[in-house]
Image 1 (cartoon, rainbow, N blue to C red):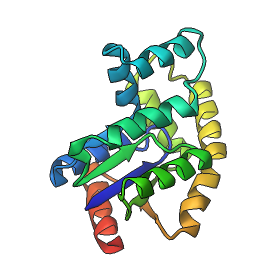
Image 2 (cartoon, rainbow, N blue to C red; image 1 turned 135 degrees about the horizontal axis):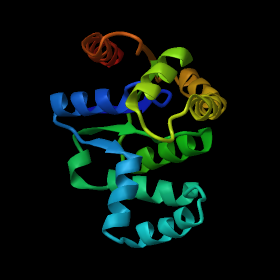
Image 3 (spheres, rainbow, N blue to C red; image 1 turned 135 degrees about the vertical axis):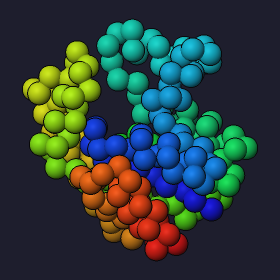
Length: 186
């Protein structure tokens, strides 16, 4: 069973790679952003509660994101595996996920860190052309990402679950390296 957690800065290619691998292995690509958007559009109880925070410009609290992830991982299509993108973002969330997976009898996950230099990420994000993707905003997002994710990388490293993949290659080369890294980790 393939269970993969994707880490990497914004613009590293996590979503692109996760979608390609999920299709290749016929397993769901679970993006916390997609879960949140779906919960909002379907007006689920969790979605309605999350909307109250978002309307105030606040981050959705961990407990709500965790509940949405738990709900999603309990769906039948996840039994044969999954790729998780955008969660966990902190050690607290990682500890929650570890306990959840034990409760669901879903162990054996691998954590892939798509490593991309900041300057490459900045260039990629600026090329997207989004209004909120200014260089200063991107640098701030990277700074926050690095400060939150360093402990998370250490957390998975000490558990021998972390695989680092060079995300600063062609799309095809990154996919090939991911497939090889995940296969060798099993």
